[in-house]
Amino acid sequence: RQATELRQAISEHHGVQPDQVFCANGSNEVLQCLFLAYGGPGRAALVFEPTYALHSHIARLTGTGVVRGERTAAFAVDGDLAKELLSASAAQLGEREPSITLLCSPNNPTGNSETRSTVEDLAGAVPGLLVVDEAYGQFSSWSAIDLVRGGDPAVAVVRTFSKTWAMAALRLGYLVTTSEVVKACSAVSLPYHLDAFKQQAGTLALRHEPEMRARVARLVEQRGRLLSALFDLSVEAWPSDANFVLFRVPGCTAGEVWQRLVDQSVLVRDVSGWPRLEGCLRVTVGTAEENGRFLEALGRVLRP
Ligand SMILES: *Cc1c(COP(=O)(O)O)cnc(C)c1O
Image (cartoon, rainbow, N blue to C red; front, side, top):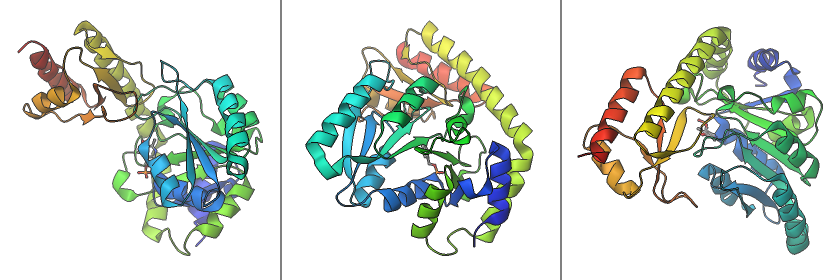
């Protein structure tokens, strides 16, 4: 019931104590537990748009208010602006001052990650918990788990087996934080919510860390190739710390580009409906062959 073996394995993987790890059915359920424990009616969560849409969706599902902060032109979070927003919302919202601040780093769908000093700064400024969603954490050069290890009581880091571990259908995610936050999340999760098969599979996966690291290295190499090819095609593309690249084709709507790629059997994500991402699409970094096919297809869209 306590997923003892799995939590032990995850704690060793990150150099923390087993009572600092909470596991659930995907990181989305981890987030839902955080909202059940620390959100709810009369409370609010702060998010920085554009970001992972499930954060504000789960907030709404749990009756938690949502305060939206803006990112800079490069889609980074500005620590000073965030602090102004926190004090403004405290004054305006009274008891609804954000009890949860969500930071997606590397950010989905823009791909950039926050610097350590921004995250440290925010952790010191938030009135409640700073939840750092590191679904793409292994692609980044640093992790906020360092801050948890250093004893910061405000930081909770969400991780998943769905991305770099290539086990999305397993539905397994976890939280690395203080034992107090783990207790609060356990209190709102259903008894026996994590099946035994999943616990075994997650524990076994962690023994294959070198393969996971090799996969990440291959993707990072391909990501560099993709970015420079997009640059050569004069497509606007943003630097990425994740396994996807945000891009925009000047003079075309995102819908046109999406359809003309689909017509050539290449599927990317149209993210143009998200705040501030007019005209943008997101391509996932694949194998060398897949990336080649994407670039050829995009070339034909640009020069029909
Ligand atoms: C994919 C993703 C998740 C969801 O992961 P699951 O563990 O499959 O629920 C969470 N956060 C971000 C930012 C993601 O991109």
